[in-house]
Amino acid sequence: MFNERKALQMTLQAMLEQRMALRRQYVDQDKQLGADIKQLLSRIRELDNEAGIGDDESPEDEAMSTEEFSDDLMRRIKVRKAHIRHDYLEVAKHIENLLQEAMSPMSLADLCSVLKARHQVEFASPYIGVQKSLKYLPQVKVEKDGRKLIFSL
Image (cartoon, rainbow, N blue to C red; front, side, top):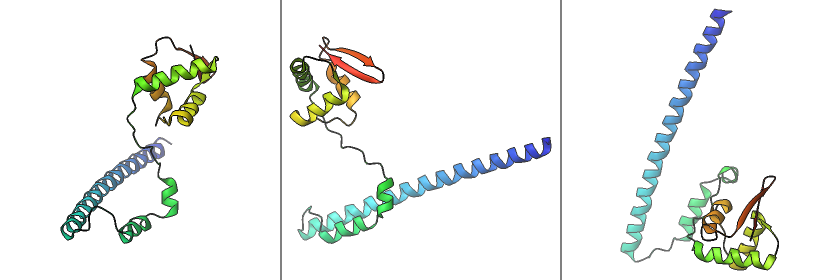
């Protein structure tokens, strides 16, 4: 029993090492391909600028770049929201006005949906965005109701 266990453990260790080597190889290849693609794109832009085409991407280039990704691959890629710089002092004023109007506590989700609807303020991470804004509002009380954050004046 001990010999079989030791053999299995050694096999497991070898497989884990092989897995790590494959991951390193994949990351290295991915970085190299990314650098090659970046270099090609910059050369294409140079040629376009020399020819006077400008920065507009031609429809053929756009079609080629979107055809590279299959629908299945696109579904698996996590899409991140674009980073937007916010004036947190201004957002804090909006939050204070919303809480005064509501005259009742608001949840984080409700607060963010109203901010988006009325003021076109959308955070990539609602919790972090609201917390940064609340630095300017010491009078706002934050409570927890189960797993929900509730904000009130």
